[in-house]
Image (cartoon, rainbow, N blue to C red; front, side):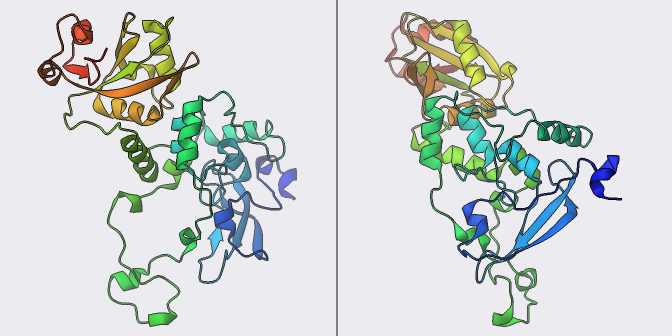
Length: 337
């Protein structure tokens, strides 16, 4: 019985050509591919799909597709490396910058059902991502981090496990690389984390590096969990600041914002988070600024109250206004407010 005639196989995917980025496709204009229908299950939705395999160039390793085209279109990613097709970045970086929240289930029970429903909403090669309403600060951040040229070094053969153990006898004829593997978190990448944009070590490195470059390096004092927003619109309020902050933090629950103190006279606000990781994620998302009511709001880390007092902030200034926060965190620019 043909697969499509079987009701249990109706959701299986058939395709003629994969969705790939320029790096994975390789620099060879005459690449040859092998195609095998229903060769493996998708790494995201677990449905069988058409698998493609090819060699991107001389001295490179063979590459294969790991997710189906439906899942690739939902996230707008390459079927092989799972990086964003437009910017060449991990999905966690893109979703953080654009505040995209795609509620794709990751449990075995729901993900296949979700993929089958989304397949009917896809039109050709069109993706479901809509970044037109994303804040301009996030788009600027992606332009700064985007990889515009192909990175063919990513297609190199993998490291020879026998060489690492000192047992490889093939010498120069070995098709794998004879190098010592790097012992860091970047070597602990996971396909599920890369696709769903969660706990991706590569994304964390990119986001933290960009935040530091923009002057938002996390302070050494681990008790500081607040961010200071300045140059707010004149019509801003405490509720509007809280709402906008929650909207621009992809994957963060509104409950992670513990409190917001708005100082209308100074047009600034203090955003306090429940813990340090939540504050660091917010600083990474707002590294290029925060668009609020047509105004680009600047963001800075807070500082401890002891340091704020040592800086000579007079009573009744922004430091005094934040006394009702119930926290030891004060903004670094409190005296300027």
